[in-house]
Amino acid sequence: MERFHGVSIVYEDNHLLVVLKPPNMPTQADASGDADLHSTMKAYLAGKYQKPGAVYLGLVHRLDRPVGGLMVLARTSKAAQRLSAQVRERTLSRQYVAAVRGQAPEQGELTDWLIKDERTHTVHVAPPGTPGARPARLRFARAGCASGLTLLRVKLYTGRSHQIRVQLSHAGWPIWGDARYGAGQPGQQIALWGAHLGLMHPTRKEEMRFDCLPPREQAPWSAFFPDGFDREGKIFL
Image 1: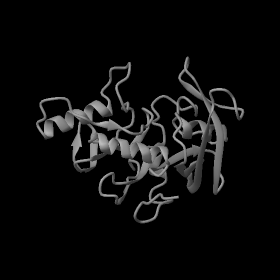
Image 2: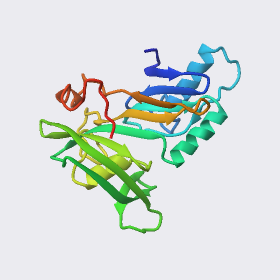
Image 3: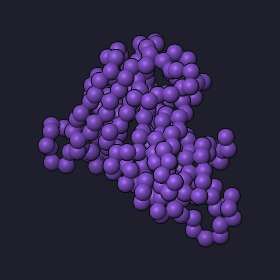
Image 4: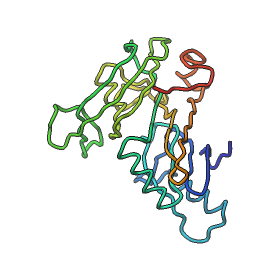
């Protein structure tokens, strides 16, 4: 798998670029000034194809800065438009694995209303119908237990900011290593990973599926491998 400045390129054609965003890399440029995925991948395309001018690369979805995993970017405006439509219509499938504290049930669904505090850049669960709050829904299934943690497979039905982190914490299962919502400790890497991406190719109209499990050598993922996954590592819900 080709790598460029820490980013692994999973798939590439004239319309799509599927990559693994490393943990702690912002999806796009922010006030920190740190290297971000969007700019890094534009530099990759410019160098590889010797493009002298501005490189087009559309962002259609995001991952929180501390979270790593699969992302798709659009290499043409047509692809960006069609992938964005899949996001809106919830046909672009995103699934995650999370190691949470406590004993979560075998499976379940969470529906909450989330509101963002712009002053603190944190998200909170609010009473239904609260002005400014938006509905959030996810489904989860237990995949294993180890060392007081539960490994969950999580499927998103909405794409709210910090959604998985906030909803699981509110339900009583904070994600291990989450400094903002889960009492993570210094030096811990949040145990949330974008493990599956499913989409319809914007021009060929073919279903595409990508899977990548989190790095086995990092805590606490090492406690769950190979338990909790089938031989192909699939995490579909």
